[in-house]
Image (cartoon, rainbow, N blue to C red; front, side, top):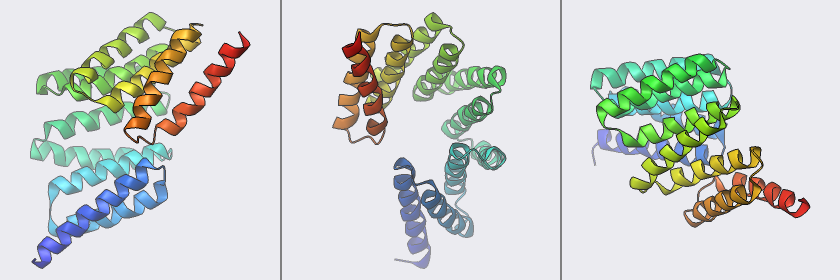
Length: 226
């Protein structure tokens, strides 16, 4: 194995470790792994790896509320995706700009970005991204009290994710649909959706399951008290 191959393998290993740490919520550790991976990829000049790692660093900054850092990482990542004509990357980072606006409370801006992301994704044939973005539009509609609109977004997202066999994505949107049912007082349907989603998440070992257990516990308590 050449030095180049060894360094490339190390960059990929560090990126994988970053992904694992990120999935577990260990954000400082994930950030460290990604930065090491980014440094190696920059030395090697592997632009696709650089763009993807910057994208993940942006996601961590967003999670930690470091909005300026997130915006910078997403912009740098998007610039590279555009040069590479990486349509999946372009649509994905567009979605992240929507999340960034949403987290900052810039809801009108977030909706516009999400709508643009869906248009891009349809143009590029990226149904998986459409499903994720519909989910976020549903959350915004729900927060606005537009419950029928939110349900339509969630059900459209579930339909797309189901066709793609994106089981974790289906489950996550079903949880959100369950929370919508809870909000409008349909506790039985809420419990059914959340319980079914939890079973799926546990069966695939998703780290999201531990959060959903709290939702299910709360719903069970409400049902027992009703």
